[in-house]
Amino acid sequence: MKIDVFKMERMQSTWENIVDYNLSESGVHPLSLRELVSDEELEDILKLELGYTQTNGTPPLRRNIARLYPGADIEQVLVTAGSSEANFLLMWRMLEPGDEVLFELPNYMQMWGLQRAFRAKPRYFWLREENGWALDLDELKKLVTRKTRMIVLTNPNNPTGAILTPAEMDAVVALADKSGAWIVADEVYQGAERDGRTTPSFWGRYDKTVVVNGLSKAYGLPGLRVGWMVGPRDFIQGTWPYHDYTTISLSALSDRLAETVLKPENREKILGRTRSILQRNFPVIETWLAGHGGLFRFVPPRAGAIAFVRYGLKMPSTTLVEKLIRGQSVLLVPGDHFEMDGHLRFGFGSEEAALRFALARVDRFLAEVS
Image (cartoon, rainbow, N blue to C red):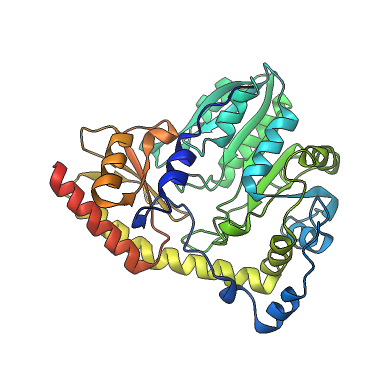
């Protein structure tokens, strides 16, 4: 099996811990362990034996996850090493050479690369910038056939921060039902809405639905490497053996901390922190973008600490980002990593002072190239 280089992850992993300012991150500034647990919980965690955990996730953790999906039980939950492993297991389990997959663009491109690696036949439908990043349902309708194996979406979307309307979600479900296709919904930004209204899940709308989520983005805990998938019981039980061939299980510490995070009282506090960061920082980047005389245009994101911005410089996006790294030690994500050159993804979930300093560095760069 051959794989394409995952351009965004390669650039991020090369530079994100080297540059002075990282604006490539799509989550919020991470929580520390001290912020996450009380003294009493910490004492309990210090007694934790660091052996193997149950490989599909411990029952207390899966119980807390199942609680988020009405009607689900713990046998419908598979815990993974981040949502990226959940995505990998899904593609590995579901795809055979020649399978037809409908994939939303722009999007996080992991599943795009996996579809190609597993020799599926991806076909693409777009969110349209000119329509406020709304789903082009007419295009999707033309693509769905009896051969469609799955429809893959990210909602809220990365990189645009757009959220599907209930009517759009219902239309996707109707098309999937008509063709017998699965819906694979990456919902990892759910809980990071700027207006505080939780994005509805695809869960419960259609029997052949698998939902992916995790603690990296909305929860500000990427270092725990905790993700999950939720789906029909038979599907989840049939996917668990694939997990045995990859990471086997979470670390005992990550499993225990994730259980703590997803207790209802803790979860609401953590998501409240995330939304407060977004509310505080979005006006900073919105004002900054507006202050450049029409150089930038963007549709304000409804969710996520990300702004997907069209720029007016005559320079390819990867070239621009590479020059910015070397000239000002600031990392952004080029739009061509989402198959949309002429755009940049700005992450605005860092500490406010760091965000302002980083944008000042970008100003210096723009003064040099304009």
